[in-house]
Length: 165
Image 1: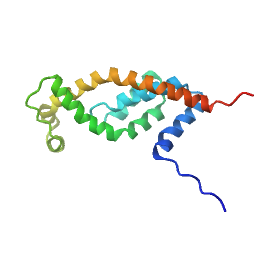
Image 2: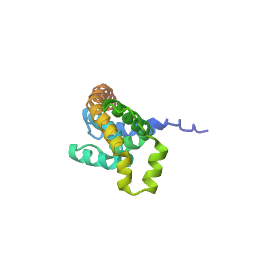
Image 3: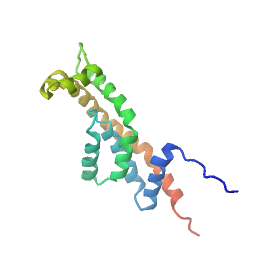
Image 4: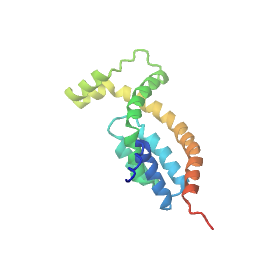
């Protein structure tokens, strides 16, 4: 009778195992930490549909691991969707907007049914509000994630190194 393999969790299979594989192929723990930190910040860019391209461009410029960036981007999509609303509301507060009229249903119908110029006229400032909040969050997100992930990545790397005898 053979034992069936123990099923891996979604996060271990989609994020943990690829990170461990990178560590065993010479990618440094610090580089992985930086990639995860920058990738998270970029993946929270508050405009839906642009994060994949933005991750590619930033990853190429900073010479980061593209598969890891894209996997992270897709894994945090639910958080990204929530953060768009958070960034809009924070941006409205920063810009001191009293008559905030952001409505997702109206945004989607305007985008689908009206000319793009009309969409920008109606929701352009909403985008500016979200972008402002995101730009202010990036200098907090990247160092916070980098310095909190670095010890974990170094520990994982030390576990992956062969023991010297």
